[in-house]
Amino acid sequence: MANQAMANFYGTTVEDLIGKSLTDLYADPAAVNLFLSQNQWVIHNRQSLFIPEEQVESCHSDIEWLQWQKQPIQLPGRDEYGVLGIGVNITARKRSEAALESILQGTVSATGEDFFPVLVQSIVSALGVRHAMITELIDHQTLSTLALWSNDQFHPPLSFDLNLPLPCGRTVEQGLFVCPSHIGEVFPDNQVLEQLEADSYLGVSLQGEEGQVIGVLCIIDDQPLTDIAQSEDLLRIFAARAAAELERKRAIAALQQLNQELEFRVAERTQELMRSQIDLQNQTHLLQAILNSMGDGLIVTNLEQEVLVFNPAACRIVGIGQDEIPADWMTHCQLYLSDRKTPCPSEQAPLARAMRGEVADNVEIYVRDFKRSEDILLDCTIRPFYNKTGQIAGGVAVLRDITDKSRLRKPYASVNRSFGH
Image 1 (cartoon, rainbow, N blue to C red):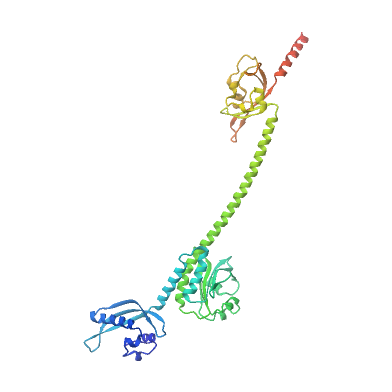
Image 2: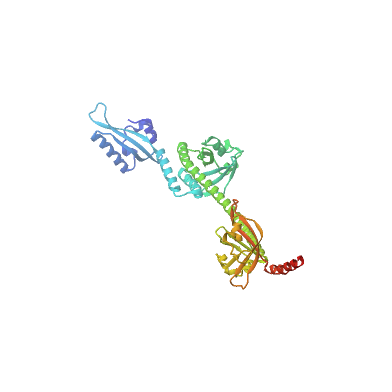
């Protein structure tokens, strides 16, 4: 006995199958022996036998796969057993698995920009269609091809305006669009479909992490589509991978753009710093030139009595060289009060007073220099200076040598006294 499905598989009728042997159905002796051994095992052991897949040749000389459940059955009115075989044609599943494996092998090592051309080429090869295309959605109104494999070659990038009637536009709107045949009648004015000699179309949308459409993956053929479910399943699988690669591509592009902006900002900031440094150097040179040209001595120290400024005039006045300024320069000289006998207490020294916040002009003080034979009379102007927080950071003293003027004052004082008497 046999049913109609089995008769269809062999391309005959149920009546014609009755009474035929395996050798009548299969030309391959090895296949006949395999099937006979299976049936004999079931009959002899009185046990069921499950065969997950079995490759056979159909009536169209195509290789197909069947899955069998064979079990013993007692023949009616006879004391002997036969085999009841229930077969399921799993050819579509096997071909889908083979296509999936083929695409996976082609794309497993491809990432980034290289992934898209490898994907469309692998899809064409695995599904046996003429064209495959992957596009990126730009500005919600334009599709731009990332890769187009057509007639065994890659084609230059194309752009599609979604304001025009397009199959890819339908895919963007619906998520899936299938036209098994006569696609030209659905979109009669589409020149691209005409150039591709398209008859059928199947496309699925690429979706980003937030569910938004970011592109389309589609196949186009010059023949009607068969095994639509298989093709759809495969495209959905690789649409997910393509979407991930596209988002990574966009993330890398965004990162590169950010890096370029940062590099530009760094370069701009570097130029600003260089200009500031040049300005600072110019100001420093100007300040130094002013300090060098001053006739009065200028001494600046911080609260730790470290010398910050000691201009050439100050060196000349106190009798030391410009390259001989010691950290404890005060020990180089002895300061005396106006009587020229009483040593000036350290807390009454001009810079000490300035660092306490005192402001004073025309402070006279004698300086005894061990390198000189006579004392020097200095006129001092003292001021504190402050940091950014408004606190005293040190002291400033401007020194003027008035020794000669002091000598001239003595005769005038004597004359004045004489006239006074």
